[in-house]
Amino acid sequence: MFDVLVARQCFLEGLPPDQHAVASQRFALAGNDLIESLTALYGHTTGFVDWLLALFVQLGRLGAERPTDLGILDAERARDPDWFVR
Image (cartoon, rainbow, N blue to C red):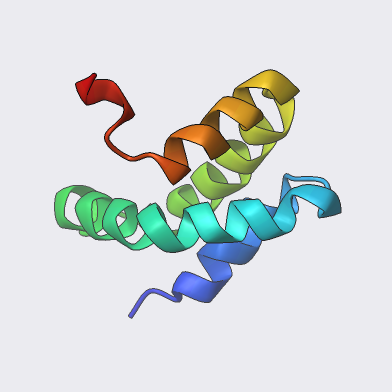
């Protein structure tokens, strides 16, 4: 069984501490779905767990590089999930 908490920690590892709370919330929303989908497709391959954990580290690093104004936009869209319908 894959440890989702380890994946979450790998994701947070790439982020500065001041972004951990928001990133944890986002991981809670999408992390399990991503893990389940990738496991269904590639879980049988050798080295999958190491690859998946490295992916989460990289996703955290990429998240840390996003401009602040995009983070603000993310927060606005999270408060209004139907923003794209208008």
